[in-house]
Image (cartoon, rainbow, N blue to C red; front, side):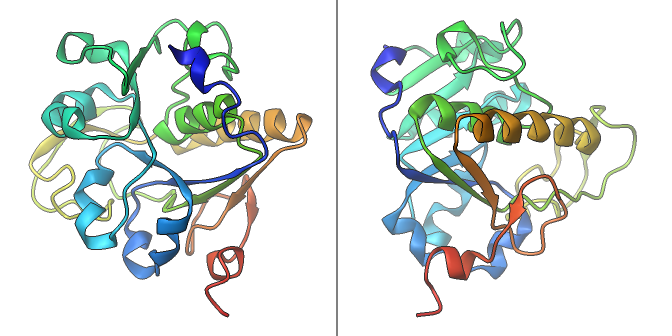
Amino acid sequence: MLELYKNRHKGERVVIVCNGPSLNKMDLSFLKNEHVIGLNKIYLGFKKYQFYPKYYVAVNEKVLRQSHQEIKKLTCIKFLSARATELFSENALTHIIDTKNPKERFSIDLSKGLEEGWTVTYAALQVAYYLGFTKVVIIGMDHKFSFQGEPNETRFLKGKDNNHFCSTYFANKEWDNPDLENSEKSYQIARKVFENDERNILDATLNGACNVFTKVDYKNVFTLNK
């Protein structure tokens, strides 16, 4: 089934919509005219932002378990980790991928697994590559979090969630602390793979803290100034 998607969008552009609070300060009207990959609990913003992704990626087990009912209702094409495999069934829209034992650090063949890389954004970049997209534009990748404890440590977030675009995102729920250092190492690998294949990744996040990818102004990329 996955073979149907290989290089489907060769030569085209895609927007990966991450879940940082910077989304709330952007004019996202352009998303209606773009191929979009949504991540994790992006469904919390569909009504507010008035868009719906063509593709969806989730690999974190806590996200999959907390959101399994909402994910099942999504009518876009979904790429999900097998970490919560008992909650999901393969079908025309749902593809379960091994993320525990990927064959490569950056997977160019999803049938052989998908590397999580400490961030769902990295997983989405592999999906975008497999789909054949030549240009990837990332938004909402704020790359800055307020948290207690160590990177990757499971914590209970009491009260509002200020790290994501929606205050209820992980509010009063368990989540895994981010690992920004290892996330950046993953991003560096993704950038190299894309550039070696004459493709590119642009970071159009508003005031984003990640410096791995070329920074661009989203209003210029999507001609919102005209």
